[in-house]
Length: 77
Image (tube, rainbow, N blue to C red; front, top):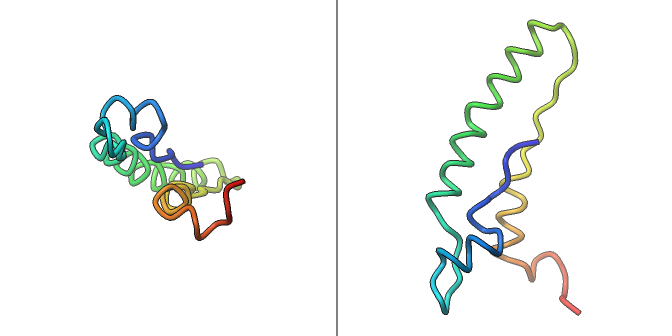
């Protein structure tokens, strides 16, 4: 699995997101994106070297979209 948008976890939003807006911490999210950009090719290389089945699953984009647009994914009770 890819790294998640760590800048959007509640602690980071509270500490770095501003008192009223509690937005995501973009520098932390950028680091997660950079990590994911390097992880996928590294896993492809390892998969070829080991002649096995290694899958890379990108969860970052889906989770980030869920955080930014929660109403698209259902109602809160």
